[in-house]
Amino acid sequence: MAAERLDLQRLETLLDLLIAKNVSEFSYEDEEVNLSLRIGGAAVAAAAPVVVAAPAAPVAAPVAQAPAPAPGHVVSSPMVGTFYRSASPDAPPYAELGASVRKGQVLCIIEAMKLMNEIESDADGVVVEILAQNGQPVQFGQPLFRVRS
Image 1 (cartoon, helix red, strand yellow):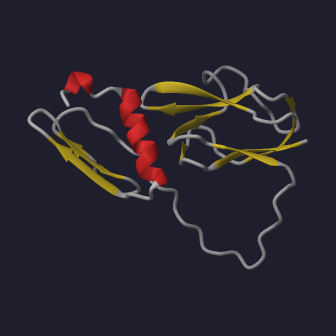
Image 2: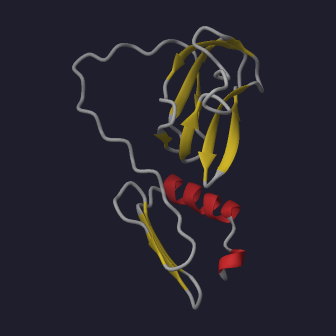
């Protein structure tokens, strides 16, 4: 697998698979590429293209009585990356708390491996919760928004 053939789409697919299968470490080596990934850990080393997986979110201590979540449909992250509420720092957010949204409407962007991926609402409704912090890493399957029909 030469460096020029090691494309971002294949790396993203590999990362998604590793996360879905709950694999925390992965290594691959041939004559041109030496790739090591540690998901949720410290170092990532590679002699060729470097892939950095977002660190796992810290585990919070259990709370005696956590508040019940708002009712509604959860829109989750389809990938590992960085969550952004708007297209640029000076642009308004795609969706605000209390805003009406339609199925297919862009709610946010997840940056993964220098690619900006628009995340759309998969239901009509009103945004009742924004569950991720702007500019922070998110994991595959992490809840981003709660939309009430």
